[in-house]
Length: 299
Image 1: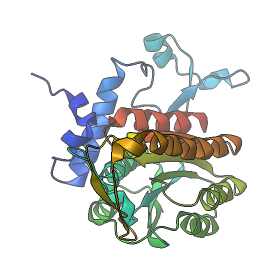
Image 2: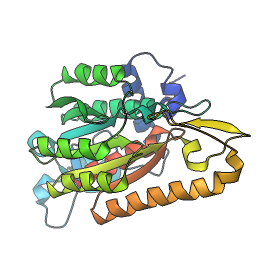
Image 3: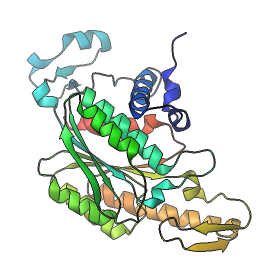
Image 4: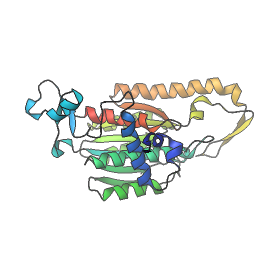
């Protein structure tokens, strides 16, 4: 019986696999296998080597073999046209270590997603780099497209750990100053910091003409506050503790989180930044499709 790769789109399943390269490969293959029975049908493993025909394109570039199979017009893309520089920004602040019962941590989810995106981009001959950050840039691996770069990327992702407090805005500004060539910037973070500084950092990338995708990763309980009786809540970054009855503040808490996310979403929309709310119970296909959609629109 053939392996059902779609099971490897589930975070809890992927987290049990040994080795970041295996995790990355299984997520990507699971995604591609799932495309054939999903609303995303039409995208394929060749997505970086073809783009949809647009009025004004030279018809000599049409791929008639693809047309025969799909009844759609696609333009052939060659390596020099498709090469892209991508930058994956992985939040390693202490708050990313949070997890509620049975789910992976936000950091593990972001790490597995980063691994899958690295694998996907490198197999399409795109150059991809990695940035880990908390209060500042912790590690910067410049984009490369060589096959050996895969091991470097995945090893860094696998060994990264959430540690310090957060200063997202500072890290974004620092990175925006360091990236000289226009590229695709993908940010994976819980964004638990001051909204104004975050938005300022994001706009810095856009000012420099980069395409930006933001994956706002939260644990489901951080959105709905669906806890039981009296509980003690501890800030993972400051150590501050608060005893409360969750049911008494659940409604107001959820509204605050929704308002917080809406403000960031609105700011991203105004700056032409792709914003995607993700929670750690969500299968990886939603995140990968969001990335793939942006990848398609770059051409």
